[in-house]
Image (cartoon, rainbow over the protein chains, first blue to last red):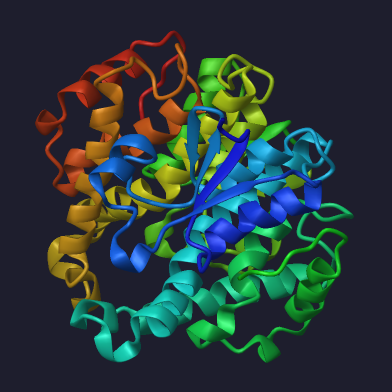
Length: 205
Length: 205
């Protein structure tokens, strides 16, 4: 028998962690199937045919349906809960920060963490080496936008934790592995502690 | 008196066009305020302080509140309408394609269009020149995922047009300005015609 909710993941991925954290905060049980992206396990013909034609994890399996994209999976789990604001503007504003995360934050901060922590700087291609500085600048700009925003409020949207916090927490709390200096962002650090102090919080593996 | 809905835009931007198209399909009036991103008009102190600290357009102004991120603005306008599926899985699946658009499609296809059409290849920095091939490969991969998906269905999600179609249409229909060959993607071409044939469709400026 197939579990209701199965997370196809690599446990080192912050994008996968977002979904685990959302489920845990909501008290939803989640079966985990693990793949090693370093060994190409999400590019096999079976994975491409049955899980995600885009060759990426995470994918949230709901019965026999498959939902790629971390932030869409978090939305599926949390819609109708307190993690999604009841106010129409705030709900759209939450999505705004989730799109910001995927466009301005993740491609810089998560990619540098992946390159430096898992691939190793010495093993990067010249093309990747040539992108480090731009990703450093882009990541610092994203963290500065968050710092400015969080200097005036406790949570990214409204007065309590939402998916915007979860989406941005995932790679921010491990950004030092990508060479970013959390100590430069005092309001971000306080917010990280707010998130990790939530009831139901789980750690990244 | 301030209009209810004001779009802060550069009319050459596909991200701005998404919001105009969504509003038009829904019959919502939208006041337009135009900025020239080539002249840095979204990086002035006034813009950063009053419209978007991230220095980007589009921004949808709703009364005295400001909503950046094109796909979040489309969501705000369309929530509760037929452009957002009533089914819970389909609604998350629509967001899945909107995140795919911002992560896999826009940074490749829109960026090459911007560089080749507005900046000019001869004016690109060596760093930009060095990224052209990777963005070409990434953009073609995104179009191939769409082609595979649309070969078996008329719309990206469910049985009718949703925000997933609008988000992906914006830069796909002008991708040839970035050097992509639409003729290689037959199912995508048929889908483009489906979108442009919708009642209420407006053209990009």
